Length: 311
Length: 315
Image 1 (cartoon, rainbow over the protein chains, first blue to last red):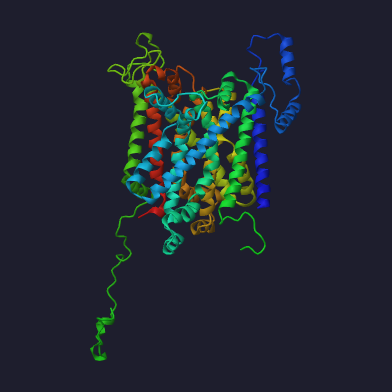
Image 2 (image 1 turned 90 degrees about the horizontal axis):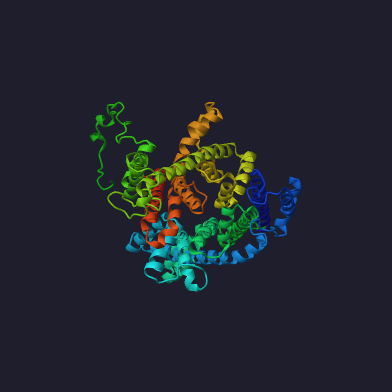
């Protein structure tokens, strides 16, 4: 296990380094200075600005100080909002985005697994049919479309739930539904198909023959094995949800990181774009790392290490 | 069988019992059922899947409309007509008009062109890069394979849409950059699938046979390996198209799509967002409907193809 973790850890660092380098190179490929096109075209001011953002130094020095800023977690000031640093934006926005993302994945996991399991148990029945219809629709409807429909129907026409912001649990319902529907559909489909496969296995028959209660068979014996594919896609799904928050936050006017990120894209605020990209990428790569390790711990069949005497 | 056996005494045994039957030339070897090639068989099974066929028919209709819709429409995609702005769907404007008086019906078909073009181009480029990279990696094996796969693993770990957003910010929003950005990250999945397939198939006997006849590597890859990996590759392509269409809509929605006055479904949905609360539902409804239907059609077609192209599921 230790060796595997070390190997995956090195891969993780390499991935983050590549993302950081890629971001740096791409940002410096843009012709001209970030200050061009603004009113302050006075050469002295421009030189001072470049000095302030350390753009006057040679590239390799910039690259090293950039790497240092990543390691020390200090992404410097924003260009368009000079009195705010990227760190401040992250500290303000990320907790909200994180909350939205985590609640979404929790909802998606719970409802997806329950839906998929019931569909598998009632294979080819009415519930199965409805669950799978829902699943295909859930995969096909983009989250921003769903979000607008939800706002229009539930918030505006019927006035049941608040349409925007992130101030109370009631406010969180619509954004979470909009963001969680797609992942729920994917998880339900995966759970159903792997559950169907697991239910035909001999050890389930064995458990039935032993006279275990159906609930115990499903929860202890079947689900534990059927959920492995779900754990596998959890990492990539998380990436999808986090990028999904960009759009959802914009629609629901939630003051999370997505809002600042989209703003920084539209303002071409490079330090913010760079900082957010590197931060989010590192976060996602780290989550993938965790998922991989958890996967190894969960599945008794995968031996990441080989102890002496093990088969 | 044993019950019906009767004891026959030796003197009743007739000689003719031991004469060989006249040979019926060729008949024993004849194949009674018509032989089905892999593709014919797959098509036969796909045709039985009503949902997948529905998806296929929808996509064909959509393409026809995308090609001919804007040609036959009396309205222009870009020309503004302010007197008839924000009209609900009617006999003259079937899908209504937007805030500049542009006909939503015409723009929807124009958007279909863009969306399908982005999706198909992304899938095709992924296909070529993936086949070459995955084919070489899987076929060569050993050190080459492990180095090539390390690279793929690192790229696979990159958050897709973030890289695409980054590329779009830098290259500027246009149709070409969307396709480039999507394929820069997208080919990795295809390469992994091709490599897995090639690794599996290259050890089969028919490849060994081909080698023993002195076939060159390039011939083996082209004639033996690739045709047999086509099933999973085609499935992957049909699933790439909807995700590319979604990505395009997503980027347009973030303001990184193609620029107005041209239309894609994502741009139309994005433009409709501020006015949705003032009751102009048709502005969002039609592009959203077609994004969803197209993704639905590609998804069910991909699922159907997956079942149809898998020889193990043959009945």
